[in-house]
Amino acid sequence: MKKPIVFLLLIALSVFQFCSEPTSKEPSEEVETSTQTENEDVNQTLERSELAILMRDLYNKTKAYGKEGLPEGKPFPKELYTKYLAILTATPTDSNNTGEVFESYGKGFLSSLEVLTEAENVTYENYNNMVSNCLACHSKHCPGPMLVIRKMTIQEPNAS
Image 1: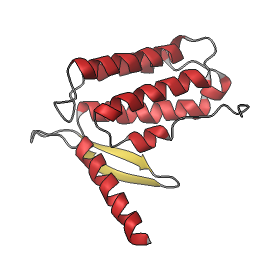
Image 2 (image 1 turned 180 degrees about the vertical axis):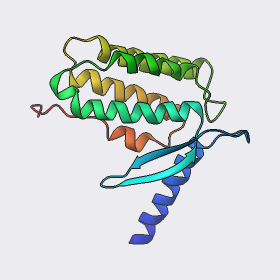
Image 3 (image 1 turned 120 degrees about the horizontal axis):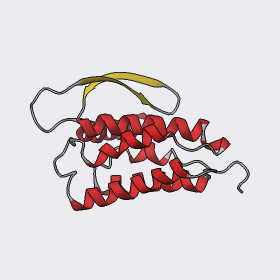
Image 4 (image 1 turned 135 degrees about the vertical axis):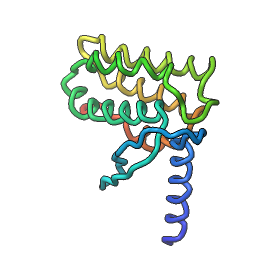
């Protein structure tokens, strides 16, 4: 029973590693990151592209916002929104993650993030729409992180 689980875990880690490794052999910045599994933190040092670093930061900040700011209806921090505008210009791990299709998904995501930033009273629907935009892009570009992104969806506490 444990062998299939270990095998699936190895496949998932391989996909994640593929999406985060630079394609060029040029030196890149080493970044200490924290990858969360369901109940534990795993620290690791990996080489990441500019876009991968930005995406990791985006994931951490929007997930934290979903737990802390969203329940109170607080807007997403404007300075972070401004920082994440760079997803359209950051150097990706894979050069296929550029062009009109990637830009279209990126603009859709940024539009949903802007709603979180500009709304006077942010709703769970606004937040989950942003998560859906992440999933839409990752379904076409770098699908490795989709499992953790899906877990970002938050049900409204009083919704049935």
